[in-house]
Image 1 (cartoon, rainbow, N blue to C red):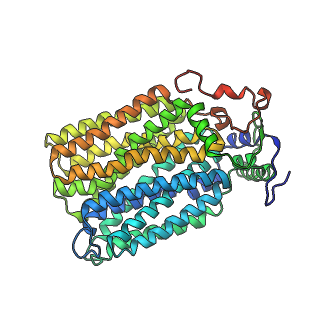
Image 2: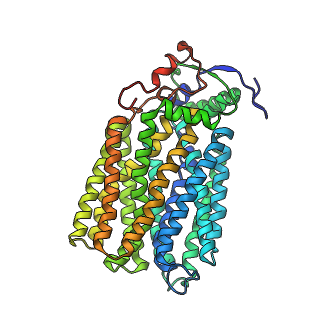
Image 3: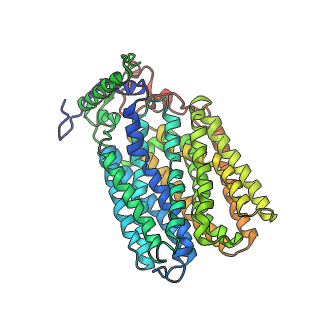
Length: 504
């Protein structure tokens, strides 16, 4: 069997997945987390900078003839539309050509588009490169989530995935505080500061690009695409490195599987697999993404404008308030993440969605009653988003682990794109339209819409969430290429398909 330029296909029996899953945590895993997970910091930086500098960009003298509503509404919606398009476009390529090639390409697209955003001279230019920045970030979601889940041991997969997705909020904190400095006209001219904020995203992206070069291709992807020998050698190297680090031999891997290698699969087979083979899981994925996408895209893009409009907070200081809620958002996945591996996926996913929705209804009631100021409003949002951020991160974890390996990147892309298009494009537009009126009742309505969608998603998760904690990916959803012989994988292939059980 060849592992050269043109991969050979055939049938191979391997223990590579079991060998990866039984690895203890090591420096090699930290390298993966740093190389791949830090892209969420960039995304958080991007989104927050736009929300925080929206008021400044819309002011006379900013260098752009653009309104606040266009920045928080139109530009935000175009960014999300670009992310949805990029996820679908690059998701397909990720399943076909591999994780590593695509997570390098998508980061390069992000870097170029962000640099061009900083050079914006008119509204149409700003809109165009906000779309293209989103296009690169959307591709990152598919390539990165699939690679992370295939490289991280099953024992740690839930918490690592949540914390990595939650690292978005470290970028949000940085973006919020950066905007305070960038918008200080004592330091930078009015038409320069906001451009420097975007420029920092380019610098961080270049650093990540250098680290990411050392992240390997997914051995699971290589196995199925005719590169079994290369996958075996890669895992051999990792095992030797881990044994040197720990000073003790690794335990023997548990189980093996036999796969029929193939080059690629078509959209038709992907669609049949996702919707016909796993209908409840598909419903779960859509519900989780729609709920979190509306809530997060609406509030993330519009929080600064809300503070300015309803609480008379100066546009140059909204970053301080946003940094507080960003910190609460990061603490959610960080502190609650381990419970997704111990208490289990279903109670934690359903619980975080339901609780955040109920708390948001309470926040809307207090806001409507006029008893909140900028500080107490920020505290309320921090509590809501502490739980909501863990739930939102679990949406990415869920769709990346409950479908077969051959469809993983495309499944992530599909659910992200459809769910985010429904909630992420409509959310900023609806929220901007309601808050722009200046009527408290309109803003309360926007909050209640987000709360209702979160609760609805939590109820779906209560019945349909999959008990994936501590289980190998191949056990949760056997690869389409796995042998149909029961002894090859330890059980019949179709026992992992939905069979009328909740969360099947």
